[in-house]
Amino acid sequence: MKPVFTRWIHHHGFTSKYYYYYYILPLNSKQASMGALLGRILTRGSQDYPSLKAIRDRGDDLYGTVVYFDMNKYLDQLIFEAKLIMPNFALLGEEGTEEEAMDFFHSLLYRPLLDEEGNFSREIFEQEKEMLHQELDGLNKNPSSYAHRRCIELLFEGSSLGQYKYGDRATLKEIELEDIKEFYRSMIASSPLFVYRHGEEENRTEGEIPPYMLPPSPDEEMKRKKVEEEKAVSQSVLVESYRVPWQFRDERNHAMAVFSNLFGGYANSLLFRKVREERGLCYSIYTKYDKYRRLLLLLAGHEKTHHDELEKAIAQTLNAIGQGEFSDKEFEDAKQDLTIGLGALVDSQGQLIGYQFVQDFFGQTDSLQERIERIDKVTKEEVMAVAKEVTPALSFNLRQE
Image (cartoon, rainbow, N blue to C red; front, top):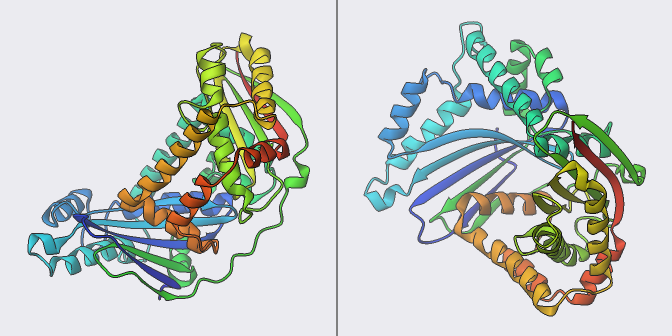
């Protein structure tokens, strides 16, 4: 399928080139499970390279070229990601080899290993299905991962916004080999494709991105409530969620990002220092701001006997920020940490492509430098204002038995 949109990102000085293909899919649990399975199956062999050894040997022949596939999701969109990482062959005096690397990539993506009936190998399908099942089961055994996912599921119950990018075990069990074949055919034939290249090519774009339409929001159902679940885990985990009453394109998101960083977003945040280090109420504590789902999450691993005191300390810290009870140094350090992290994206080819794709897909036109400059201009008063606007939603407590 011809790409809907293509972007070349020029950056001099890297010794490698990245090609990322993004297929846009509707998000539901079955699609997510099938996409995760498909990516694993495609890396097991193709018509030209019918075994893992053949794939590894070809990658080695191409000076360490790597191909891999993964799933991701943004709001109500599921993304199948196909990625090629190869050396800048021009630096090796092997300019023509880039075409061979691209053919290797396309072989794994577009010429999969199929039998005479056009089906994927049942043996590989069953093996990868079992491996994915074990991976999903492992997430349930990790208390922080489990608590985080349960909170999201409960917040967005009945909505695609609550889906995990690899689906779930119950759905996975129901998927048959024929489902994967039809999913693959449909994706390649009709799913919108975005292509990104990062390397020595000059900056340019081709095609137009259709405008993104926000899905109906279930946020109105985010009433303040508490849910507790007891489980045999190594530690209790508290997940506090807070609703943000504006959309992701709102200018207040810059102040909100600074607030999250000051509150619990980095190693010197107020929660880390005052709640963890000074009072010893938890093993770990941090915040994550999701502007697309209009949500701030706070996760804290702790002893169950400290739960009530921990909740009070978190509420006190949030209230203190709203009242401006933080120093100029704490404020500037939070901004500086955030801008340093954003600035570092240009040094990571993969992260920069991912950032640019999200910007493009959701119609956000501000450059990375413009975003850094806007964050640098955020005032203390703006942070105090957004701190007062977040609304406590679901509090999920995974309690150690």
